[in-house]
Image (tube, rainbow, N blue to C red; front, side, top):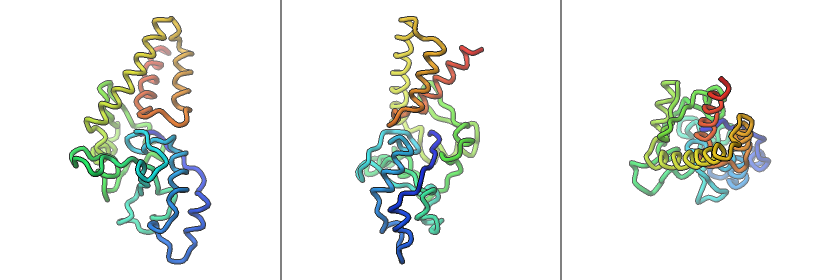
Amino acid sequence: MLYIRKGQVPQELIEDRVTPGSDFDGLRKEPIRHALLEEQGYLCAYCMCRIEDTYQSTKIEHYKPRSCYPALQMDYGNMLAVCHGGEGGDPAHYTCDTKKGDKELRINPQEPSHMKTIRYYDDGRIDSTNDDFRQDIKILNLNDTGLIGKRVSALNALKQKLYEMFKERTATQRSMEKLLQQIEMQMPKRPFCGILIWYLQKRLAVTRM
């Protein structure tokens, strides 16, 4: 998970919302999906895997479930772009919105203070310092073995890059800060960049001591 800064409401959504009798199912989804992906760097709001601007790749998720909050079904602030979470496969490996269903989360990727509680481990697991948010990680099944393996692969690639920098004597505090900034600002973002940012911040904290 990574903090998502919401942008402007797509004009098409503004127009559709004032159409008498309109509901979410009748909205033009393409402009909404495109705007959400631009905000999120083309990553799933929950697991941070790469998603593309197609119906087959991306779902529009309601953070507050439509079944419980029908008044928010066309609220852009309640929409996130997410992956298909293994839909159609083994239910034991469902993740993200597919696993969540109509459950209500307490952790919100649009809240910076919530995202600051997120922690990772070198073995690829994701965690939170907040007990309620830790339960939400379980609801989303973000420690599924498949996701853990992909985070480890992303982290190992970063570690290899750092090893090469140390070998070439270019791994200075400044160079690592620059690498961190590149990963944070890169668009589209790197898949699973949350664990990369966490790892670099941890390494930099040691060098600054």
